[in-house]
Amino acid sequence: MKVKMILPALTEALSPFWRPIKYHLFPPLGLASIAAFFDESHEIELQDEHVEPLNLNDDPDLVIIQVYITSAYRAYQLADYYRQKGSYVVLGGLHVTALPEEAANHADTIFLGPGEDTWPLFLQDFKTRNTKKSLSIKATFFSGYSSSSSRFN
Image (tube, rainbow, N blue to C red; front, side, top):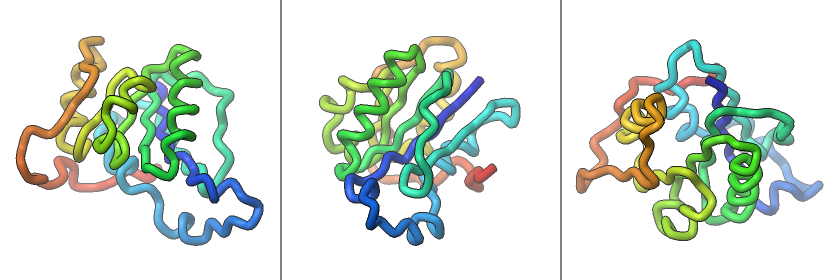
């Protein structure tokens, strides 16, 4: 399975005056944590638009986009693009949790709250093509990561 994980750029990151040094030092840990749940046989590409232009000439089976308020429009643009190409699109992050109805218009599945606790359930459902439109953590507090490490390869 081909998986593409995207951290869309903040609006100001597309400026010629943008200095991406901070983003080179701190990769998107949320996406790296989710990547750790995949098998080694899965082909995973994690792209951070703050540090590199996105490769949009691909056909991933699954696209995962982390959405912040400052990158929501760009995230929705990318999600709509990949859905039109036939990829299954998942959105998660702070913005999605705050405005799930808005985000749901651009995704096949949205994650509300920490994705690390619900991601294994989603992967099982995705393998059997029995996915849900929305997944959220049921606990009233964050129970911690289900994975002991992030995946950076």
